[in-house]
Image (cartoon, rainbow, N blue to C red; front, side, top):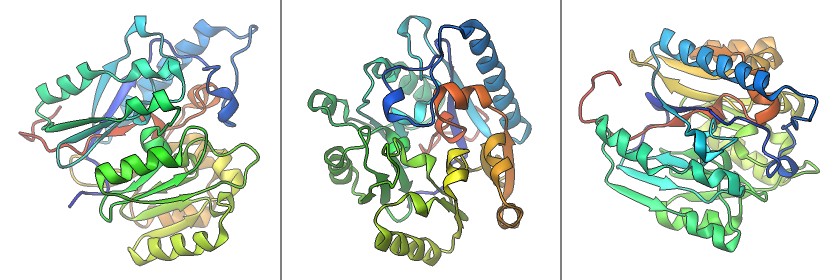
Length: 313
């Protein structure tokens, strides 16, 4: 049985960070870098925010491995690796179909090979990228919130999360898919901005789900699993509260990771509900959020692969 939370995280240090014009129309959280902006300064700020985040992970003994983006690939969104790859406890690696042509170079087999060299056991790679030829997209754990224990995948349908690609994932990985539509004028591009699912917590913006009967069902199912369900408001969602991730550190201590923007949006009682159950760790990444349109969770790809030895990575 899979664990719901990972002890290993993968991050990509960006080299070509920018506001991807191919994703702006579908991402209501993203701002365009205009001609008056200083791209060099923005990239320096992003690198500083990224370095600070890695420092926070190290300080709290949360295991992680950092790969460098490749300059020549010209990938503006490389900082968000969870969209192109997922790792599973049975040794399976899944590669996903990406809507933006500029993002497709992010899929790097050298990273999978490097993880194998670091002792992670990879037994099977499933490449779903062929679906791009049919304009069918599914952007990893951006598009899907995986309940790895009960084998359920929650997904908000959008231009970057298609029902056809979800069916392929469901049939290939034996997951039950629960899909829905958002109430927003522009469909919520990635489910992970409105929903976070850990072992102890579930943060969900139910107001953003169009099918109200399904809201009740999801809430009941999550409570039945023993999770504390925290109802995220639309305003809190817009401040990236849903883009949080529950992880474990080397000592098996549990953390809920989120941005400083997200934490500031928490109500006092919500913060207490979280901190009664696990540690809350927030990291300031305002530049990444503004121009990338994603937050802390998007920057982290969880490595659920088994490891040959338990030495630090």
